[in-house]
Length: 172
Image (cartoon, rainbow, N blue to C red; front, side):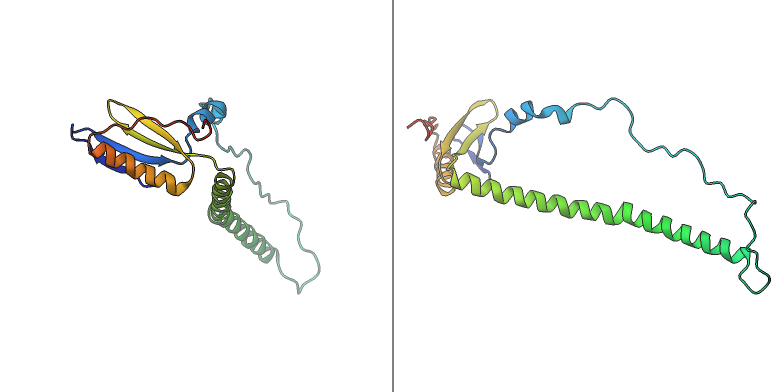
């Protein structure tokens, strides 16, 4: 949403905008527990160590098979490949997967909220604010009507007029 900035003849700079979510403060107060300060430390602690002993049984068999050194090399190669694959998944693939999932959820919520706002005809809030001045907020039904009202308020403020708050469309 584009904010229109206009300067009144008295020199006061006003910002006029259509507010997308006017009830955010109420929601943050109600569901603000997720912002509570964390007390304690977080992090992963790895205890223990991998112990490779020398008491491994020999491969037995009499002669032509692969030796113990080849088996240890294969095990070390498999462990290194596993660690590299786990690191690649943990630090590259999982964050990318979560990023894509977050993007899909945000786009889905945006589409649902726009459709809900249009279907239920919830009014948009057009507000004008300036530093040191009491703000003006008006409820307008319809996106285009809200944009027209934003431009009207900006024009009136630019000419030195102060718009009066209109009654809510739900109160008429």
